[in-house]
Length: 148
Image (cartoon, rainbow, N blue to C red; front, side):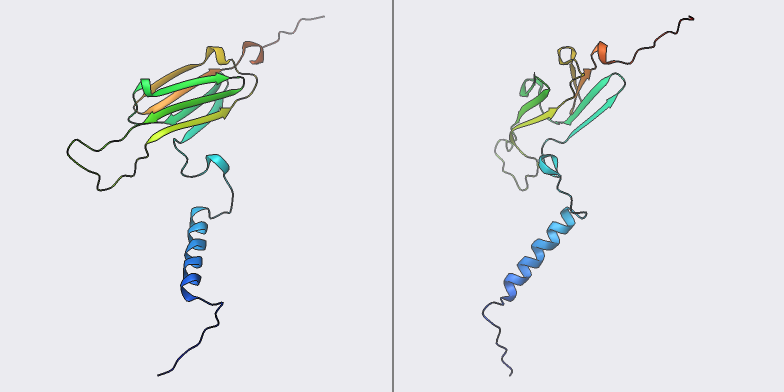
């Protein structure tokens, strides 16, 4: 029987754990980009896009009642807060729980050419949509040309 001696600095278990962590990191973020606070796993997911009329903020918040959501505008910041409470059915317990619970808050910085006073929000099939129109003075205008 052969005995192998490893130096004290080499621990095969730690090496395997280190390798597993590195592989997890690579598969989570294959391009190496740091997405910051809005990266993968941030709840709830938010999309912000614009068109000629203004900006739209779409947020996935399934299973929430309207009284569990609040939308607040302060300066150029739009903040959406809510609370999701997921409890086990009466007399039962969870076998698996993947839906997060608790309070959340997401803030979005918006351009200065938007009119937050005219913002409108709608909630349909678990999707919250906030439309913030552009200010009238920020919209493009047609200028007529007069003959001199």
